[in-house]
Image 1 (cartoon, rainbow, N blue to C red):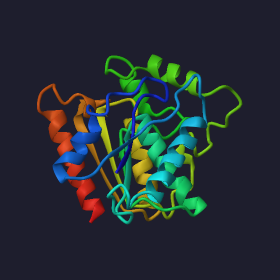
Image 2: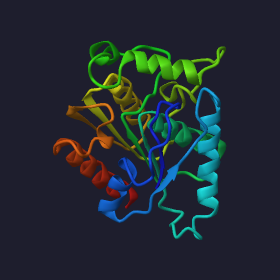
Image 3: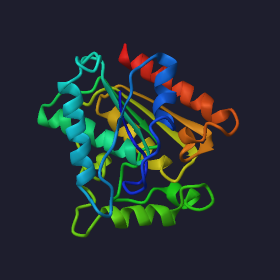
Image 4: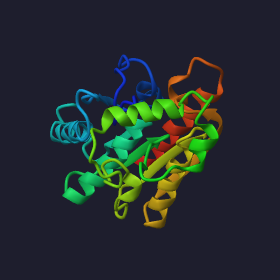
Length: 231
């Protein structure tokens, strides 16, 4: 399961033994492959997309040697990683590449064209702030990009024929609205989607597993959904 890091296309990489990657994978004894990518502002759009696509093709080409069943590879990520995972699922489908068995999108950013209501509701005081999101976007974009480009805003892309999806949002997340909208768009296009909102949690909960019991329970639910999707 290639898992794309969440860091707003800009922040430094987590240590590979922390965060959501092994936590989602370990309960179902799944092999996980953290995918790194070049970061903004040194490497702006579309560098991250290109790197994730290259990693996806390499993993598929070498799956047998890596001990991975090439017919049961899922792609997944959190936040910016959810954005890149959604973009990858669209790109490989439309370009005729090897399709993921499933996509797992945790709190994905999916739309740069419109401001959802939840960005106004939760843009301050709930960890991920409007200031941070603006900083990330300013670093990733150099000017002249079309915000409706599906490689930036997968919600504006063709979602028909995509692989099954697990989409999870959180109740107090400014990205909740666009994650939910993307789940509904895929479902309306005939894609099998398992969607739910972790009502009491904030953005980044998958990396907050040392605080209380709600976040670990949410990640276990995600792991179970991924297991169902890989059957």
